[in-house]
Image (cartoon, rainbow, N blue to C red):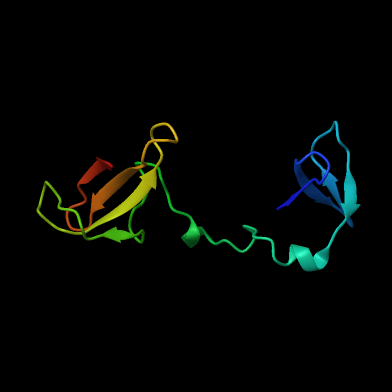
Length: 109
């Protein structure tokens, strides 16, 4: 990601130039291909890299927590996802699904 040197807004690629996304600024600069090689993008991201945060998400294949205990069957392993359910200054909520019986619960940190 590249930022405008004039106003600090994000810049986007437009052919051989980078263009400021702030309509009031309008700054442009030549694209630096060497610098762009070090940028982090999501182009190579696969579906397996995405962590589902929806409660109805398919948990299988997601990270496994071994520091929990299922209240339904007593199993000590569960898949989990993390979601920010409160304001940003509060810790996130972890949603669990038991690897044995499929029971679901949440944990507020």
